[in-house]
Length: 309
Image 1 (cartoon, rainbow, N blue to C red):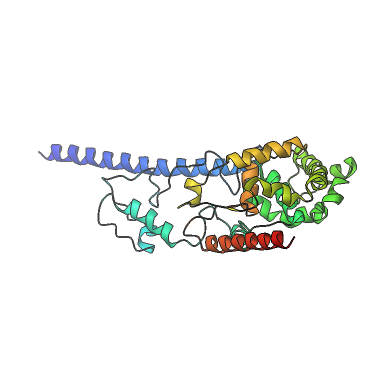
Image 2 (cartoon, one colour):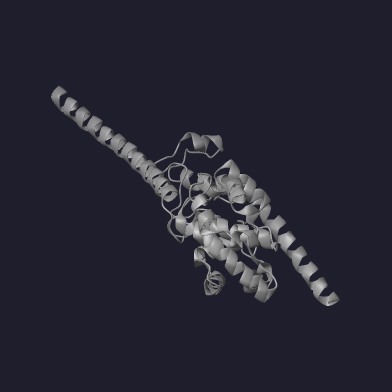
């Protein structure tokens, strides 16, 4: 009898150890994959990827606070994150979903925001309607530079880009010589990718042609949304916002027609989000209504100008 109890105890201990090892392995593998993908994205320069940062599909798997790949009805999640936001964990199978719902309702920013640089950019610029040609050209260059990298990487290099590219003066960049391009490729403050640097110069020359034909770069790009920002309604940005749309497809095709490079549809959609042609702030984001109000004001101002003319 004593031997039987020892065997049962040993089996139970082994099962417990196997379960623990499995959970640790699952967490370690998940962490490794995330780290690997992020590192790979920082090193490669591929087109296209959307901004602010979706490396794979427009609808990535839902992440739960307990780190489970999906809710498990037979397990209770009692981690510190659940405790910190006050979600009860006494009911099996409920905590994961409750944490996800409550965290979504507590946030005041879109869920793509990760770093302090992201926060500042999101709160002050992303989604704000812009019709300034210098700024539009800047975002066109930066979105192209971001292809294959994280948006945070580009934000951290933004001042270096302004210095290197003559504060995004279109005419000045259009005059860059092959020697200037070679010098830029030695500048550690920017993404030293030849194709991207050369594309910035080619795009500047294309923008000059666009300005000559359409009056301004703003007139040209805003025509793809009929001059009025598209107001979307996403509960969660990363889960619901698209990577491209028919409008970004059309803009991409038109820009390529002028000889622009690094202007695939996903890059164009990221550009449209950045300059406020599309308001993709998620519904619980504090910036959503502000950008919508600015868009309405801009449309009203344009209508008054048209009547005056």
